[in-house]
Image (cartoon, rainbow, N blue to C red; front, side):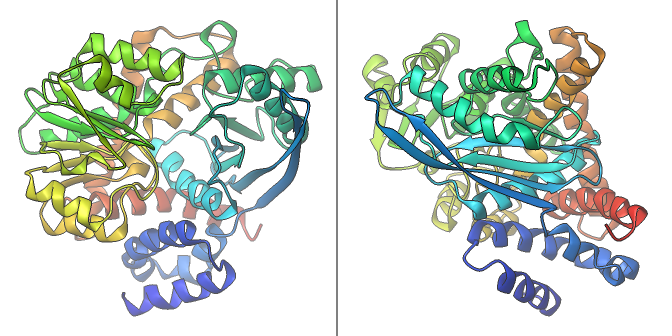
Length: 447
């Protein structure tokens, strides 16, 4: 580790002990922006980085609710309002047993730079609960969401903090949360994104993260005069992001061959086609089943329990499940099997050692804060439509999304070149995102 990076990280680590994922996310950014601090010392003098890594506000609250047997359950709720320098706090809510403050600080910090990359006026935030919606009835999920929003509603608003969905928070949960917000405040406003299209949502929003990740990968492939046509693609996850990544891969002529969940992965050597994808969407979104059922339904597939899909031979890999799902051994397996393009649909799914292996082997590597920014970009477009009380067509939103992903890709490459690391998307994304926020911090004084 560079001495400057080590000194900065030592100070941050002492203030945030045990928050592994947060410190990992910060170290990646710090390692990238040292050239900026050297070239523009006024950022260092004004302690811009020290201010950026401290959340503006952290809210922690209890969430009591009744299960179907009449027993009281208690979960913990969070909202990390990290940065409002370039706009109101914007970022998802995650309902998963792994949720804790360190996880949400990592996600909120990533969100600051991701939202900056979109060029839309959105700050960074993240929230959620250690509540697990898996195995719960619709009524239990509704009661939990209503209790969660009863506390959260006093801290959010259409021009203050606009949450969205994340792991464990899909259309069902957003509906319950919005209904309770409206009930408590007597306001119908754009306080949540990811809403259903018939009550304020945006076309393409459910598809946006997955589509955007594929659009970013297509831009990377184009730098080598290639397209998705005929490419074999490994996708992890089987939720919203993975589903729509698979859909767009098929649209562009690629062949997706894997999906996964927390129990294991399926490998369909013949490819996941539109009919199979429709079946997966029903399995995951309606029946809420496990991905192993795919191999029982389609004899072209095998199911591998307890493993991740990175040992399967492919041209392109798209981690779309969760943080740190690709370790050094996985990255080496991908490279050894011929993978040369990785576009991340999840947030920070690759461990630092894995990223080093990608870069050492000249892999096209689109990190999450750039490659998966399409979701929050269309959330920003949803906010605009809500503010104007209008709806854009599917084609309009998709074109805006595609243009945003193209611009993010171009800005990452241009910035990396400017700072002496051509083709380094990690440096390009982190510096591009940092500069816009840093300039805002400088403009607004010591606040």
